[in-house]
Structure formats: structure tokens, C-alpha cells
Image (tube, rainbow, N blue to C red; front, side, top):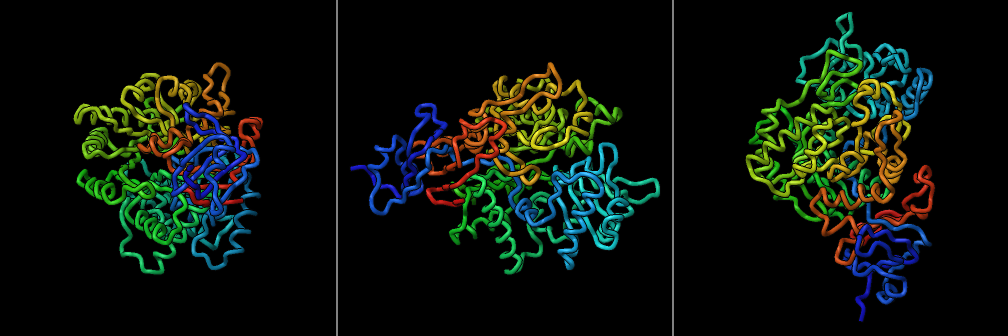
Length: 555
């Protein structure tokens, strides 16, 4: 007698991502796991009077998307802020900001997101004077899409005590004017952090800013407010077909919030939260990372990862390069860790059995991280560590084979290359310089050299939508004739958001593919993802998301 299912999906075009059984018509789920995947007739044998049946109406069904690099807590908080993606020109910016401000007369600091570096024009950089013309009497700040640069008006700078500058650590800068006052451009977290604390985002950004815990401990009302923010983020993920999240900032506070949500029965996604190691820490701080890993290790909430930032971003010249920037020939950027510091951290984290994920955008930072991983491997011996490098926006020919040789995962974001998903080409492509274009955002080159490539959005840096990311990977075009084609096939791109995401989390035997015995994490789409033109992939939408056998979103 076939085992009776809690839930069955029929009339589907299932891409299992399992090479042994790549396609099926229907799937049966019980107790949060897949019990069968086959043709419709075979699966209906698992139905009884209590079984819920979902008709996919011929549409694609995929493994639930695994978002392998995102910032859940901060992204959720930003959902209610002014979104400036696609806004260009002073008049359009002014209109958007004033309208937003008028609707929020009592908000202490007004915040906007998604202001690209050329929001005024291709040549004019934003200053506090531009923002003062728009909003002279209320504090206003707006962040670049990469979240590594913030622009503030004079009121905001005064309120945060930044107008006259401030001593900062390596890789951070308050851009100063010839008058000795801040110009309004703040590069990296130490520079703009005081503004975000004043805006009430202190607890939300702790996982990014310090890796520490709220002090003082949140009141019951504050804890409830933080839970509501986190739940809003989980709902946003489920709406986009996401069933697993590998967060890229974290602390115990976030893990505790997720545990409270799980206890309430409201956890809509599986979430991994890292320990964020900062350059002002010493290696004994990794004891907390080990504590987090030991305390949280379920299939729903886990830790076990150490996140590190090695550099900043290209557009603010804070990414670290091997050779100088093409448009700033006396500057290679300033690393957030010395090589000795990073070697020590990598070796100790690796010794503890922790996975390491490092933000490294410039080719100099990428090389430094690979050097650190190699040092750790020599000190501790080779193991299945699956250490990661995040972003890898520029690399070198010499470092390409080191990923496979060291077993390092290349965690990359299809929405990030200039020209993708509405991003402007400038100033980034000129900053990189034509000589480095062939090895910029080099997914295909790395894959061909044997590296494992895992895809994600880096939300809220880029839109969260995995299907838009899949499209960006498939339709990617070189910036110049003769440069290598870095695009992926549709199935390779889907694997980057499913199979490879599971591998990155050491969970390839439980999720990332659809097969009996695996967790029942899947997404039903609005159409056939294989039949649509690649440039129209974004029109295919999630209509039902199932995580752990439960429907977490239905259109």
C-alpha cells in the first residue's frame, strides 16, 4: 500500500535537478519530505481524502530557490524606505524625495535606497549641496545600490557629528571639501554608521556594523518590533520562491529572533546566520562563532559560518586591486585586514571547523583571501571546508585555477555586472579598465576552470528575485568584442540557485534537488521556464512556494 501524502502536486513540468531522474510530472510530500516523484498516475496512488492536491497546470516546478548571499534583517527594514532604482536627474530625484518626505512629516531621518553613482549625470557626483537644495530643513540620507556609499545632506551630517570629518579605520572615508567640511559622500560603514544608528537602525545593522549584540538588551516592545521586521523579510523571500537563506551578516540577536519566530510557527524559510568577524577583533572572538555553531545546527536555523569583509566596492574606489584603478592611477585601495591578520583569522576559523565566507571584490582582495585559505590549509591540513569568496568582481588569470585547487567556492551575483538588470555601465567599467574586462564577473571562466559557482542576489544590494537573476546570467553579454562570453545556460543558472546553493551549505544530500528523502522545498511557477524567450524569463513568476511541505506563499 503506497504511503499516503499530505500534499501532492500534479500536472507539472518538474525539473528535479537530479541527473538520475531529471524530469517528472508529479510529486508527493509527507511530513515535510518528498516521498515520491514520478508520473501523475503513480503519484495519485499516494492520495487519500485528507491529501491536499495542487494542480500546477503544466507549469514548471523547481527546487526551492536557495539565496546564498543576502542580508535578511537589513533588507527587510529597507522595504519601507524610498526606492530610487531607475531615478535619474536632479529634478526626478527632487520630486521623489519631496513626495516621500511630505508623506512622513514626523520621521526623524528620511532614508532612500538604490541611488546609483550617476543619479545626477555621468559626470556629476552627489554632494550635500545637491541634497540641501532638495530638502534643506530635514535630515536626509540616500544609499548607493551597493550599500557601501551613502550621501547625506547638511542637516544629517550635523546631527551625526560628521560635518567636520572624523577619524576612521582603514578602507573608510568621509569625503572632505576644500572648505574643510564634509562633502556629503560617506564611504563604507564606519563613515555612515552613525547616521543609521540615529535613524533607528542600530539593532538592524549590528550584524553588519559590529557583529555584536544589542546593548542594552532590547525591551519586549523592541524585540517584538525586530521580530516583525524579520518576519516581513521572510515573507518577501517566500513570495519570490526562496526556501533557504544563507545570510551574510549576523549575530546571536538574529538567531534568537528567528528562533522566536519558529516557536510561533511563522518560520517561512530555512536560515543560516554567520558570525561576523570585524578587523578590530582578535581571534579569541571566534569562540562566539563556535558557540553559535553548536547552539544552532538544525535544518531550519543554523550557523557555523564566519563572514569577513576584505575590501569595499569598485565604484567608491574601496575595492582592493592588484594594479591601480584605470581612472585613479595612483590608488589600489586599502584592505580592511593585513595579510597577516587575515591569515591568522582564516587559520583559526578553519581549525575550529568553521566555514569562512569573505567579501572580496577587487582582484587584490581576491588574491589575499586565496592566500589566507592556502595558509590555513597548510597549517591545518586539507579538509572539505568549502570556504567561499563572495562577489569576485575582478580577478586575475593566475588566481583562476586556485579556486578549484583549494576547493574554494565562487559565490557570485548575476545582477551585479554593469549593464545587467538596468545597472549603468559607468562609472564601473571605466574604473575597472578595459584590460581587466575579460576577467571581470568571470563566472564562466571560473566554472570552466573547475570552480563551483553559487549564485545569489546580495539583496538588498540587488533585487531579490532569483528568476531575474537567472535571466541576467543567461543573457549576459561581453562589454567588448573579443572578451569571453561569461553567460550560463538556463539549467546552469538554475543550478546556481538550487544545487550549488545546497552544496555551499553542506546540504546537498537534503535539498537543492527534488528526490525522495529530501526536504519538500519547491516552487511552482506561472509558466514553463524552458519555453519562454531568455529575455522574458522575468515574466515567469512564483505562484506557490512550499518549504518543509508547507505552503509559505500562494499568489
